[in-house]
Amino acid sequence: MAIEQTQLGIDAALRAKRIREATLLARKSFLAYNKVAELEILALYEEAANTVVRRITYGHRAGAIVRARRVALLAEVDKEIARLRKRLGVKLAAQMRTSLDLGLKTGIKSMEAALSAARASRKNIQIGSSFIGIDGKVRRFNAATEIYAASQWAKVNQEAMDFLFLYRPTGNTFAQSIWMATESAQTTIKNMVNEAVLLGDSSQRLATSLQRYVTKQGMRTSPGRYKSAYANAWRLARTEMNRAYTEGQLKFAQTKSWIDGVIWRRGGDGDCGSGVCPDNANRFYPKGSAPGLPAHPNCMCYFEDHITEDPMPEGVETGVVPPARPIPIPPKGK
Image 1 (cartoon, rainbow, N blue to C red):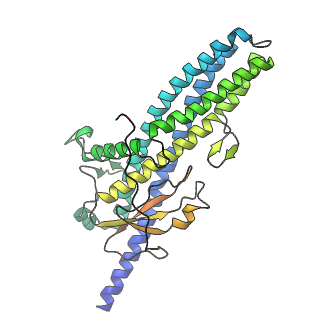
Image 2 (image 1 turned 180 degrees about the vertical axis):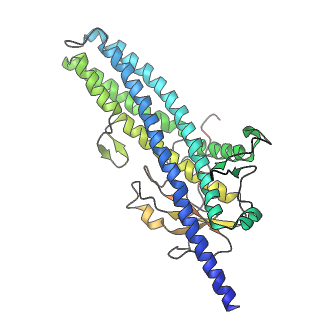
Image 3 (image 1 turned 90 degrees about the vertical axis):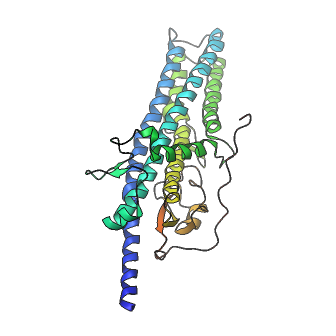
């Protein structure tokens, strides 16, 4: 009996190690996708900046900006920011869907690594008809038996996205956050136009300043805020993508009765070196009680699944946990 108990302990420790390693490995796909997504957000802002710059410099490269053009230029700014706002919302929603999928896939890959083939099959680590191909990649559904829209994966993804669109961890919905990010840029650019006209700056000088503000990385002005329209938009995108990724992790855990909770792990690639992240890192949260991640702008912390029958990994804390995440409040008029 003692030998059996010892062996169970060894097996559990090995599973915990494999879950940890597989989670980190699968998470690399999410971090790589972050780099792709950042370039996509930058491209949107570069296009918007180039459009406004063309309007500013058209036929007026030399000399001061004619005061009579001020109203027309401000109207162009409003028009282009409205277009940017719509495109940014569509692009970020698509990036969040992909991030959510990557969170679900992280759960599957971590369990594949932790369990033997027989146990993985018996516990059904997949979601609906999803499967792992011969290339080792997770396929979201079996195209031979169903279409994506009818799959369990599509249902889980949509439920999670519906939650995220209404969830207000900072007091704002997704749509409101998009509006605020672009409204700030809109106000700053219009102030730049007004100031350039008042000071008698040339069209080219205004265009150069505007492009620098819109598309450059920009210095940080306060925690999570930058002196750059693109940098602030990417802060929002990065934060919401990680929210979607960790929501995917939680959704995977919720679909498996043999997973009893998740462990908060601190991300080493975000602003997670102080504050709430170190205080909560390496803490176990029973299913349904995990706080929402990210914990702050640019937070890149994530979750790690825990199998019910296994003891806690070394260094993981248990005990008092915060209340469950607040129920999302639908926008007014909905």
